[in-house]
Image 1 (cartoon, rainbow, N blue to C red):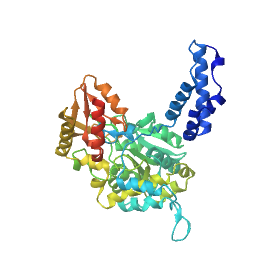
Image 2: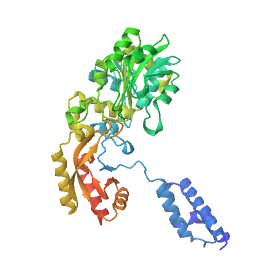
Image 3: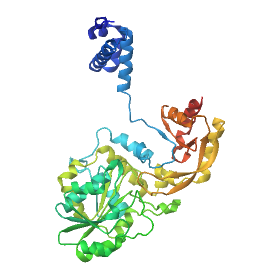
Image 4: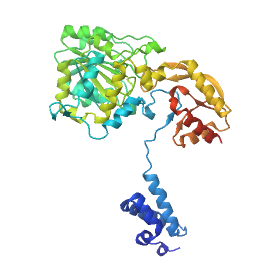
Length: 447
C-alpha cells in the first residue's frame, strides 16, 4: 500500500464524524488526534500494513480523544482495610468538609474582612479554631507537614544548628528523607546518639551558642524495638529551658484524640506536645486528624509570627479549598462529634460485631463467599504495626488476581486485596453508603 492512499487531515475534517468530534472535543484537540493517527498509519504502512479506511482513522481518533480527557483522579471504593491509604488519598473527608469545599469553590472571603470591607488574612479561617482546640497561642497552615518542617527550620534556624537524634533521621513517603528536607532549610544538622539509643547527655553535649533548636521527630511511621532509649519530649524541653534553646516537635500524624480508647497504642496528641512545653508542634492534616492534606504548625506566637513573615510562607500557603475543608474538620472536634462525623474516626471506632454484620450481609447478597476474621491497619505513616480486629468477606475463585483486576476496572473502581489465594474485602474502610455500589460491581465482576 502507498502512503498516497492515506486521506489528508482536511479531507477527514470534511467527513460527518469529524463534525461530531469537533463539537465534543474542540477543533484544536481533534486536529491533534487526527494528525497523530495519520502519523501512526504512515509508520504502519512503511512496515507493510494496509492503509486504514478514513472511517477507521476517525474512530481511532475518537478513542484517543476520549482516553486523553478521561479523568484519572477517580473516586474509588477502598475495601483493603487500610484506613489511611496513602495511594488512595489518605483520609476521606466528612460530609461537612465536602460541603465546605463546594461552598468555597466560587468567590469566597478568603482574604477579605467583611466587617471592614478591606483586605483580610487567610490564616484566620483555621487559626482561631486550632488555638481553641489545642490551647496554642498561634497557628499557621501550609500545604503539607514536610513543608511545615521546612518553613520552621528556614525561618528559625537558617545558618545555625539543629540538634536531632540519629534514631529520628527517617525517610518519609516518596523517598524524601528528613535530613534532606532539613538541609534545604539552610540549617546545620547536628546528629546525636546512635540508631537505637540516645541519652539526654548526648543532646546537652551538642548544645552550643550556635544551636537554634532541638528537634524531636516522632516515630509515626516506624518502630525501634529491643535495646533502645530516647529522652522524652518533656526532658528535652527541660534541658532546652536550662540552656535557652527551644524545642520543635515534628509530630507527624496529628492525633487530636486518644487512639488508645479504640484498642490501639497511644499516639501522642498535639495537645500533649504543647502541654509538655514544645515551642512549635508540626503535624499533618490528612492523617489522624482526618482532614485535607495540609501541614499545620501550632505553638508560641513569637515563633509562629517569624514563620508567617518569612517569604517561604507565601510559596507554601494553602488554597481556599484546603482551608475550608480543614476548618470544617476542626469544627467536628470542637463540637465533640469527631467520632460520629469524621470517617477516619468512624473507621477506627467501628465495633467488630458491626463489621461482621456488614460482611454477613454482603455474603447473603452475593450468595457466595465466606466471612472470616481478619485485621485492618491504620496506614498513612501512623501507628506502625498496629492492627484492629475485623471481619472480611473472602471469595475463593480460580483466579483471584484477575478478579481484583476486573474490580479495579469497574466504575467506580473497587480496590480489594488478595490473601492466601482468596479475594478479601474489609468493610471497615468501605463507607456504609457505598455498600450497594460495591455489591453491584462485585456481582458484575463475578459474572
